[in-house]
Image (cartoon, rainbow over all chains, first blue to last red; front, side, top):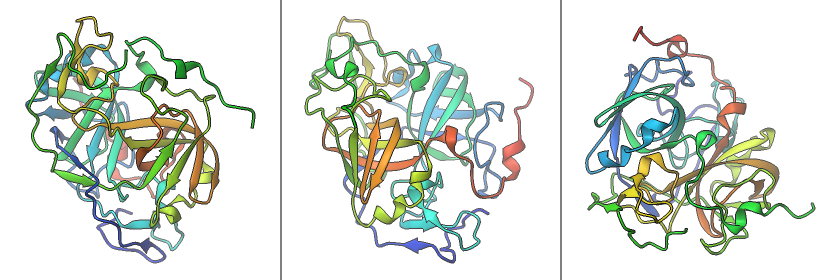
Length: 166
Length: 166
């Protein structure tokens, strides 16, 4: 059941501090087939519809080299989400769980992360599959999926450090 | 080679728009063994040192249920990073690539994402392995790793939609 910003039975909302510890800039916009939260998928699929990630200036230059990666991590701002829930009821059945144990969009900092399959790049447009966000979602960042990325810079001392005995 | 905020040969910086499209709240602080960028690992390892993620009030309640997951996604704010580079030289050798094709901390919105192994939760402290950030890094979010998470709410229409023929 999709939340339309109501607080459900059993859920707990808090009075959060003002969100002014750091500021974000929207660097683009994501175009998807989903214009309603009632239709969007729960989780994107690698064979899902092709979505278009539009990158704004002055950031288009920063796409250079992204075409080398098959899978990219997409960060975006879940602009319609409430931010004050600490306990939530995904099924709206009175059973609640903590927000950090869910991938719900309603969170103190509503940042969505997805791993998408790169289809191709056309100028400022990055075409991908695997997203599940609404049409018009503000873009925050793009980076290669960690699983397919090897740092170009040399290793540092911390790379070889392991845990002490527990 | 670790950046100490210099702009290197071949790199391109832009005049970014002010970062006031959305605001973040720091919901905790991450305690790691690394106090200098010269020592931190390039990428966290699942057998790395145990790090302590401290969650602030009023968000501690939201940890309920997180103990059910072995791997968690950690989002944090790379508070020491410059935000204006679109082309970067990871080896400081004049060869440059776009910021979005790198997992460098210097990005328009310096948000770090890691997948960490949950060790245990002690009140407001989440003990994990696999991080690579500096001691004192501000926490933005915690959620179950997508690979180990099944939505509790029922599927929606969009879940079964596949791509049109290309």
